[in-house]
Figure: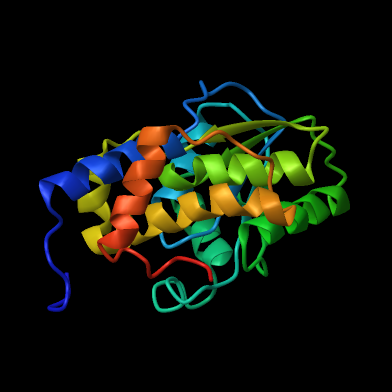
Length: 221
């Protein structure tokens, strides 16, 4: 944690936990035609995708993602490239992985992954999206908008909130991300980017409180 950061309070933790729980779709893992691993700063996405592949839930896996300001230093060759290398180290055959190295946002993750699958002759009816835990709901809403005829399932590392904070090592960044993702869940349907989803009152109140407390670095204007 950098010097200009401070520990989050118990109240901020409680509010963030509400948002964390809301962001997860709580889908039961089951077989799918293909999985798509969504690029991010979190290498746990690739770890979990590899584990699901080894469990036999899908025969093919797409990693999608270029770079963003939060990932460029960690993954200089791009998110998808590093995710693929990590999955191979964990036992996923290289021939089972398709690569989409250019996407810069979640909408592009979905549309460009679809292009890669189509080029490979894969036309899925069920897709498992593997993402960061707090990105499940936004990725689901985006995929349902862009890919309405496909059944969308979501999965992420089964981590408790405290364990995820420790794994990332930056509480303030995670809270910023939680708030930013919820803003997109709320605002993107108005822009035609995602399907609309109900946000419970207590979750919305937690969101507004964290914004007032300054967790705003991932908000869109």
